Length: 85
Image 1 (cartoon, rainbow, N blue to C red):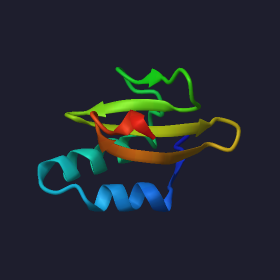
Image 2: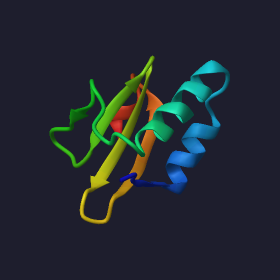
Image 3: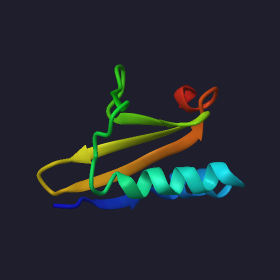
């Protein structure tokens, strides 16, 4: 069963600032979360709630609700900035 994906307004703004191939790779990675919310290489975050996946130099931070089958994208950003939030 596929999951529903919700992208927070802040994450939408962060995604809109990314251009080129990185934008397409990130969109594809988010789309793939629908069928596999914990893909190979994802990690559970320590110190805060959520999971993260790597897409090149960018990271996608998200939460998974297995009971409702929802994924909420919290943040999208470059690896040097994403963990400062």
